[in-house]
Length: 336
Image 1 (tube, rainbow, N blue to C red):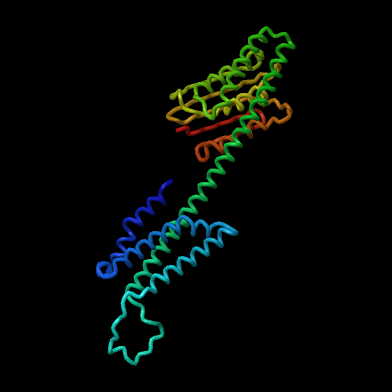
Image 2 (image 1 turned 135 degrees about the vertical axis):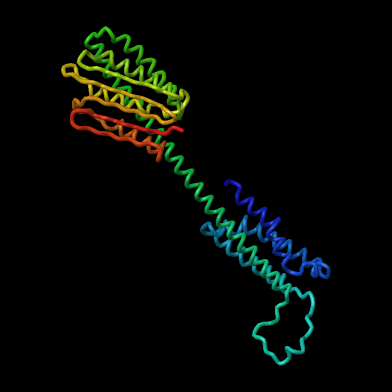
């Protein structure tokens, strides 16, 4: 698609234009007026190149360049008129035409040929030029949209890091405040997870197994601060280890489970499932709801929803349900 207009130009100059010229009695004119045939041929090729390189792009621009395009078009008509006005021979008077008044002067066959070929070149060069301009505009629009989407994705990734970091630090603070024996182990896991966040933030995609290991460590870290009132079950089953996924995409839902689904005084359960089969990732979380009002509590899920829309348009399905007691997230993404 990138060079399609160039291929069309070559096809026109090498095949179409020579064939169109052969429709007319070029052999006879070439024998008698060789210089004229070369002049017309050179002019037609020059006209096509000028239209493609100057006239059409200028006409699609604004201001001074558009006026330049109009001037170039008028000049091409004037030059064609001058070439067609060259007298090659004087036609013999037909006795049957005597007494007939013609509205237009007699136009010779070679003049008809010049104007016909001129119109063919003009029409073809303008059609290809308009196609090229439209394709270029579409590519520029796609590039602008891609840059915009990339900037949005980077913004969402940047939001995740402090969002996760402050929530996890809050959990660590609680462990140290209560002198929990798991506090130091939690801090070590937190440091290793921060290392992964720093490394993955430099990448647009990471292997699915790396992201799954990160979720495993996160669940382990959060489980250290829970008591026997909360049960946690996690299932991870990956068929293709190296499938690429966006970093820090799924952990938001896991974080949400521990933030809203754990209680030290009431029984609760947290279920996490990450399964990949035949290139389709199916992720699900279920947690009890213990309402806790926190600043930006919906930011993480909204963030993930927008990232999914940008990264996997038409290739993902997400359902979020809440009956007031349990909160359930189901996500399906076709990765290949």
